[in-house]
Image 1 (cartoon, rainbow, N blue to C red):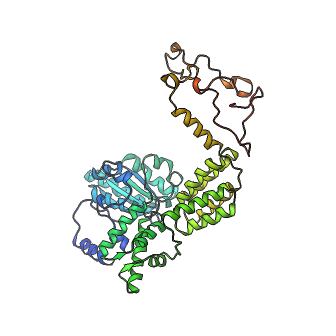
Image 2: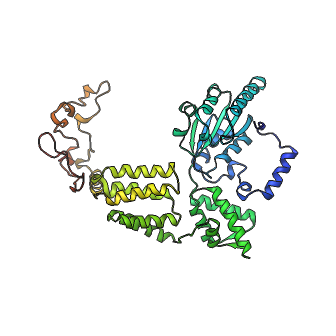
Length: 442
């Protein structure tokens, strides 16, 4: 079992010598690892001034927590910052190599330290999702009793990979992939540290290709720097980045980015599955963020398919979730699945048009300036005193009527009778008939 570190204690001569050696020979990603919260790039929603995780780390009040996010987003770095900020003992284990025996030894040492010195222990468990149920269960009693504080890091959805009882006793912090701007800031810092230069287009290409992974960005830059030096150049150029990433980058600027995504959407809207797949492949090969592609498909599913095939939205949402759960390159198949389904689905924009018409009515001033009051019979009648106000009086409960439908007014007077949703009649985009033979909602 690794010996616990002493929190804020001064490093000994061995540690200082090791740090000096690593500063010269360690990989660039290790040399660029932040040593304070101020050096962290990205994760402003957790680490910005006054944000929750920052406050807990700085005050040494962090309780058991799960850090969930893709690779290269700073989970291990945050754990190291916790180690430097805490007065508690700090133990670092990896779920890849640790077993139940290691966990039990850590728990026993934490209990002894707490009993003899009144000092708590923080256990950082990297890749906690690799622990099976028995290993996680071995931690639960000590976490529940407060004998140790667990900080787990995982790239997998903890609701699937971490035991429910353990998860319920931990705060969950979601780390997001770094934005292109954050990655560029990190790359510029690394270049300054190395006293080297890179063409702006090379840095933008690298930031786009790594999909929010800071470690991959720094590793790619380190290889690209070596390639540039081998070619006798002081500056990294896009071809160095392409070679470093072992990929052929399809270059397009910001304008072309929007043109390609426009062609992608219009091809699916036009029911051309092959064209949709072509533009999907173009986007992926150019290093486009798969989550951006997935978001566009989710929007299209309601905007252009809509009620004609309601399952389209479910499939698009499933593809978006697969991008997060599976990741690239395998999630390309999920995106392609969604593209083919949405392209072949019947098309309807009736939902888009209906929302637009309803929004227009909402924005138009109400005649007489009295406001769009809710009809009395539709108002909440569940609280004490509502009956005396007449709220709910006259409301007809549809389930008590034949066909589960009751003819009554559901809108303010000034918009009653306005038609917003006009079904196209394509696929399932039709009005359902009511019990009296009329069309539902007409």
